[in-house]
Length: 255
Image (cartoon, rainbow, N blue to C red; front, side, top):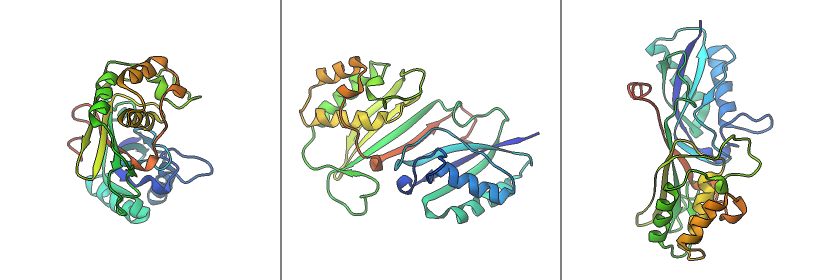
């Protein structure tokens, strides 16, 4: 009998080619599986709550793995401690906890929230975690686009082409731009996301904020289902997976 465990973690994606294992590139999953396998002296495979692309960060991320031994709370705390020492400063393990044998980090997730951070003032301490953009943006128009987007389900126009998904349908629950003195932050919550979707949305909304297109153009782009009609894809370094939601009782008592 195997025992299933969830890991809550965060990572700086700057030095990784995304989450998912690749044969010739350094990834978060690959580094973590190597460390886990070494500590537990068994071949460990991780299933993540999603896939982040090259250079994208995660402030909150979950993954699960199966192990043939049942570990006690103190064993899991010691495992987290060992992993944090091995993984260095790029990855932080917050907690490891047991779940039911059918609990699934990816398929049980009810929603995910992404943030995109745009620096309004050049800041060397934010250079790796935001995109500096000079010039004025019409935030009101960009938030108009957020409301338009909530009326739609099909987001093929914002998806990477030649992707292997079966559907381009997504339920967007929340989308909003907020502004502080030095930072503009886009927050979006949905049941699922397509590859490159958030970065393409942000690029298209920037065109709107710069008055290169108007809200009706944005609506037509959505209806076109054509990636070439949408705007550019903003740099990965400003994108964070900020929150992953699960059914009540699955993770909240353990994190």
